[in-house]
Image 1 (cartoon, rainbow, N blue to C red):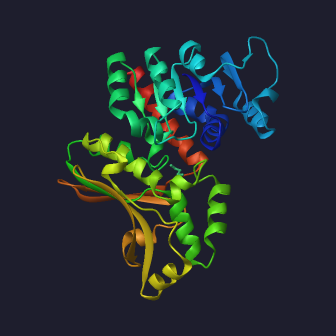
Image 2 (cartoon, protein in one colour; image 1 turned 30 degrees about the vertical axis):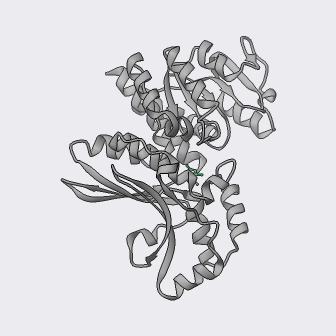
Image 3 (cartoon, rainbow, N blue to C red; image 1 turned 180 degrees about the vertical axis):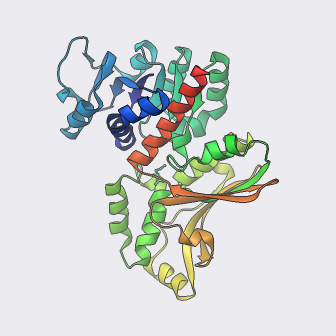
Length: 340
Ligand code: HSE
């Protein structure tokens, strides 16, 4: 499988690390082999090679500051823009892992459109195009007979969408509720131990949980974007931000955290999605509640179903390797589908 990566930040590098470290295992166990034939970054260079770029050398180059440091070789091309890669590279799959823009989905949305129009599958960890233009992309992909997959957009590689759409197919899901932002959950957890808000946020950024602009995380918009994706993917319903009640955690003080703690409660940023409504709100919940035990960058979602009652999924909600795995799980799904 030939893949083109648009974006080579935390998630793109996470995927490259997985492909570097698990190439033999993926080939032996599944017969799966992925070649990175193009990598684009906005300000740190871009590379195209029809026979594949070496993941280890890509990681080394970016660690040195720029893909320009990638060693010269025959047929290597530099400097292609993202649209040209989407249209003219020899990739089977375009992997969109550039920073999320929840307002317009751009520039990633146009790149996804171009990739589908050029006959490529698209896999996204970038939430923007999925939240903004889910229906358009789904219809385009269907018409072209190509995949439009985005497991990494919600709960990183923890299989929230695949669980709901595949393993629970046949159940009717009436509500999804839980913690779907790693940064805020990490901050709240650290503040309970006495750490200040700014230091906790800085740590979340250092670990690679936070968005390029962490305002989206702390003000609840990242979780709201994921709620929009869940509503589309699970209920076929489109919500916009102005139809949702959204509040983040940036107003919470150390005193608020201490007050909750004193009466056996914890603050959590809770998203709730039903076919009728979607919201994101900080809530005080008893420490005995299952969601209260979900700490740090971990996320959790409870699916309320008709046939199975409640099913709760707990796992990593952010992080480069974890979200890179979300992308890999989609690539493997395409590979299985193409083979069958
Ligand atoms: N910034 C996001 C979070 C990354 O903290 O959950 C995963 O989507």
